[in-house]
Image 1 (tube, rainbow, N blue to C red):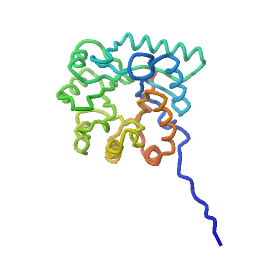
Image 2: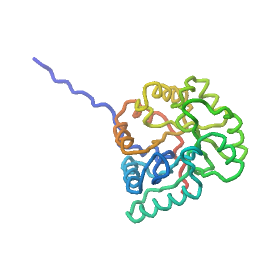
Image 3: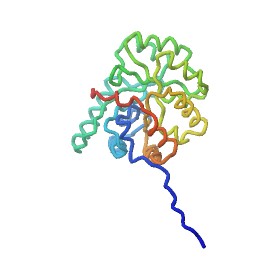
Length: 248
């Protein structure tokens, strides 16, 4: 005789509303490797809204060689998207900052213009995936002397940072750490997933974000709601996304 056993379905999340704010994405039309046009921008914003986010701060790349976006251009594109959201009656809070690439051009920019920041004068920065920025200590010091609070985007994706000491050193410089949600699922590969888990296990992760570029990311974020590590992380760990909430 066969016995029927009830199996408990794996835990899932209804959405990412526990985070509230997404502080890293590429949703402004036509200015970097994210949304190519306004229609796509709106589709991706709707996807984030459906995933439970109440606020979005999109962060286009600022890279001298590839995406030399200016403060004025970013804000103009943000207003274009906001006008379209208003026309559609979408009430999600939408703001813009930037993801600054650390290079010699950024060091010069820091001496001159006011950076485009997340609320609280938080500045999202990234580095080359091939080698660390040699002047990282100095630029972190200079940022903080100017009153900024640096956030390093996706530290788990830099192959030259893999140890607990590496991540502790970044924090010691005064740099907050932002992990990509899809890193937890293995989307970028197992070594990156392992690095993200190391940062989490050390209690060094400050923010989780989507780094949303396109529809494939959005589909994988939907699937991530039932990924074991994502579910466990969001149920057991509190992140600081909630402090990014003052609309600019």
